[in-house]
Length: 302
Ligand SMILES: Cc1cc2nc3c(=O)[nH]c(=O)nc-3n(C[C@H](O)[C@H](O)[C@H](O)COP(=O)(O)OP(=O)(O)OC[C@H]3O[C@@H](n4cnc5c(N)ncnc54)[C@H](O)[C@@H]3O)c2cc1C
Image (cartoon, rainbow, N blue to C red):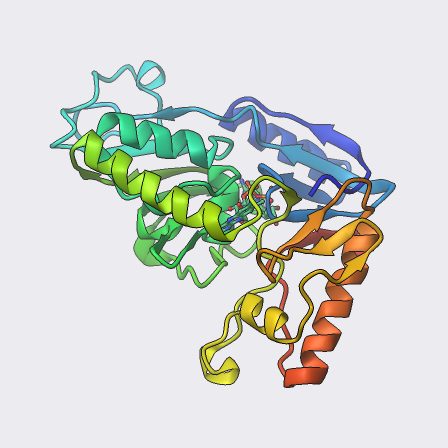
């Protein structure tokens, strides 16, 4: 969205080990800890954000699990001393550290001829944010392909969770505030040109309905329970209430998609927070439906 101020402290670990050390250091100093992925679903307050932000953008490795029996798929081949990956047909998995970009992953899968990530075409952000937020859309969710996730808990312990041990929900990886370190993604072998074609179709469909070239934070509101909203999405409700084009300062409800707020240049975080409150209030007045926010907000005191 290109709004918000600066962090009091910023740490940028480059390996999972450094991430664990960074988290331990923040806790030792009694600072409020926040984890930043690509910032694609995030609104940060104006001015100084107290505490420490750990940015994951340097943790961007993506690799195929090393071959050999019974090894740890999260471990890099060079670290484990194991052999080259098995043929794709035998092991169609990718491992990604939390700072790997979702679009880099989509591209890598496409090049290798691995299907399963096409639904994330055009979704900005990182693997960690995608898993934490269960990114996706009509065609599927991040967790559809997550086989295992390595997380760092509040007690500093690193734990591997199998998909079956997790209960991801709509726009919520449900990880109880734990930090995603890396994930193993199980994909399916397919012809690269077919994967490319499906990826392209998803991207074109997305670009036609979302203001992808403007500064935004993706969808602001979660879609309400269809039984309550009679099947209408949050964007459709905003549109039905005539709120497209509503603005505060330079923050504007996108005329293209009612669930997007765009920064026309120079908006403050306060403008955006205020506009979100205006939209919620007016939708509730007109329909009785309280929209919950999907976008994450970082403010002092939260
Ligand atoms: C133009 C546009 C289109 C979008 N389209 C879609 C879409 O189609 N579908 C969709 O689902 N989303 C969409 N989004 C929203 C966004 O891309 C996703 O929510 C994405 O998963 C956010 O990832 P991120 O790394 O940027 O997370 P951030 O915005 O950095 O963080 C979001 C939340 O995840 C937490 N987080 C980040 N990294 C970690 C980690 N390693 N461990 C634990 N928690 C972490 C943060 O603390 C924060 O609470 C769109 C956004 C934009 C701007």
